[in-house]
Amino acid sequence: MQKLQSQGVHHITLVGANRQTSIDFWEGMLGMPFIFEQPNLDKASESHLYFDPGDGRLITVFTDESREPVKRRTPTDTGCVHHIAFSVSRVTFLQAVARLDERGIKHSGVKDRGFMDSIYFEDPLGLLIELASYRFEPPAGFSHADVLMAAHKIRVARGDYNIAEVHLADAIQTLVERSRETLSEDRAAKNPY
Image 1 (cartoon, rainbow, N blue to C red):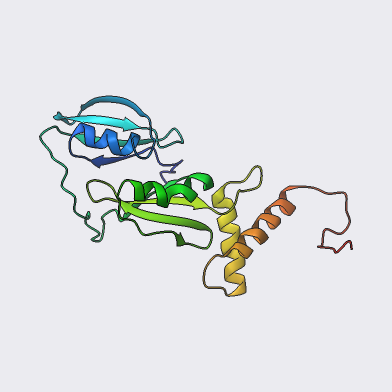
Image 2 (cartoon, rainbow, N blue to C red):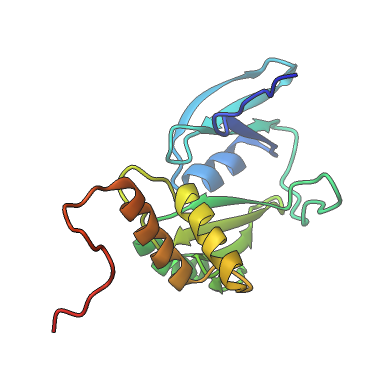
């Protein structure tokens, strides 16, 4: 038996209300270019809108002009989507509270997640959206997931509750040391003063 190996998220499709509500939120608020539209090939009465969330992958929305936005929190029962998180740059994240406030959008305020900062709010239809900003950049040749895996191992070995900045810094150092050669005989930390 073999796995069906994933290579990343291809797209996420949401059920929307009317077309303009989706365009105003996904492009007009979150800055995701509206890149194409076609009929929902499984339901001709709906349109299928495609947005680029910034990494070339897709967020798509089924819309129907007869559906009006009804804002209520989407279900969080077992098997339901709790929220969708989008990566934002640090400079954008630092302005998120003010930009949500100027639109009168209720939000969580900044949440400290140890390895990232988050802010939560609902889209016009009640889906919980998270804006997330990592507190670190991975070293060249590595991904955020590589750093998080290494930080997790360090955290567990130390018996710490959750990943914190010290684990990230140590993980980055470990990854660099494993992947970069040196002519030095001793790579240990030194105090040159």
